[in-house]
Image (cartoon, rainbow, N blue to C red; front, side, top):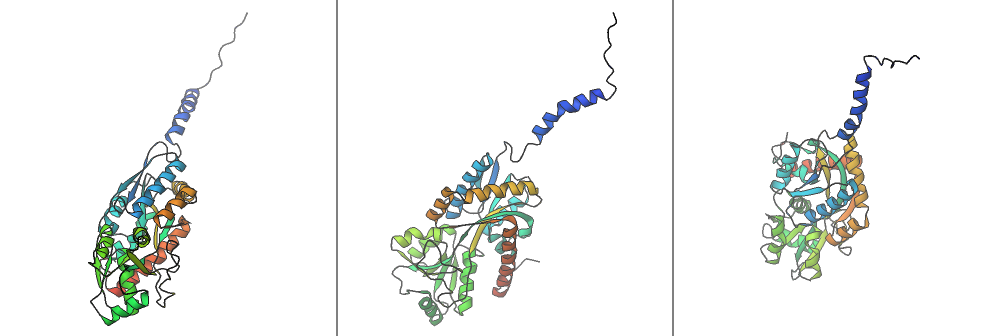
Length: 328
């Protein structure tokens, strides 16, 4: 009885078998972002500020959407320049993201950064905030026009606090009083010191964001004179804008997420989707209401147009005000 011999499989059979065995391992090595690796979110603002709290709510929502842990790390200082410099040096793999704002433009055009917003890839706009002009509740001014009239009648004698040289509130304050031809003394503070300085009568007014003001206005210790934006602020719907009071200024502060330049588009799209779903969630919306910020999601492409347009406007404004330096 003849027995059959095993068929010869040829010299490539072993190679094919090795490839077949290696395929599952290769698939594991190329698992979809983010895998089981955490993501670090750099926040340019001190812990406990409304910007920091919002960032943490966003991070929690994104963590659920991406099924990984997003760790918030505060890197404040130099108008955001410290955090931006750190981020620019990170690997563009999606595991480092930054909670950014208009500060990328003010930091660059003031000379604190050697690079501009194009050093990063934008992912999505998340929210906007309205700068407000505020005085103590017992101040003599009831509206913006009265305050401007007093500033014009007393050039160089009225002091207005802001969150620091080159900050958005500083730029907004300078723009406001430049627009009306009034000379005031701008006093820069750290963000946490602005309201205590007003309450302590160290300055006569401040330009500040809603999150720091709501509790004081409700308590009757502060009065809002105007919203310095194109629209009324949802936290203070009864307060007219500067434009409604005859002064043409609108200066919203945007916040969003960016990543180091060169991050793969597929990863950016994954992050953008996680942000979109988080911003639309009832939990995020409620948190924004408590913090007096306005959810305002924009995808990467539209967000990029906003940033580019405002960067050009900020550059022009800083040039006119004599604050632009060190930028090529």
